[in-house]
Length: 89
Image (cartoon, rainbow, N blue to C red; front, side, top):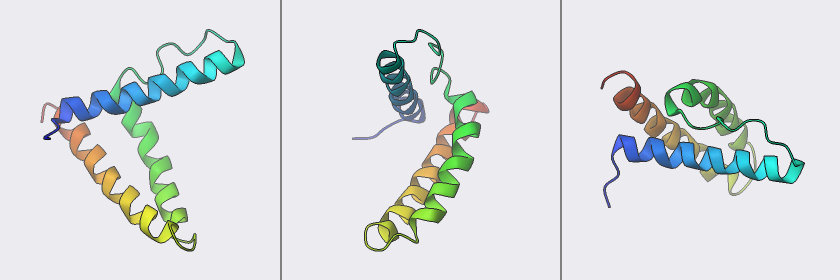
């Protein structure tokens, strides 16, 4: 199954939006309805956090030594999606 950059961006933003809705429901709040609806504004905020996480994961024995590099690869995919969907790629 091939995934286009636009579909990848939608998958990511849908996941972020779903997490925001779950947090709102758990907190009983109605704020934050626009969270995760725009990949182009979301990615620059998320990428630095993911980079830190990928660096830290490497130091966790066992699964962390695999998860860190996998996350690094996913960050590269996010960069490609950003380049194609947000900068007229």
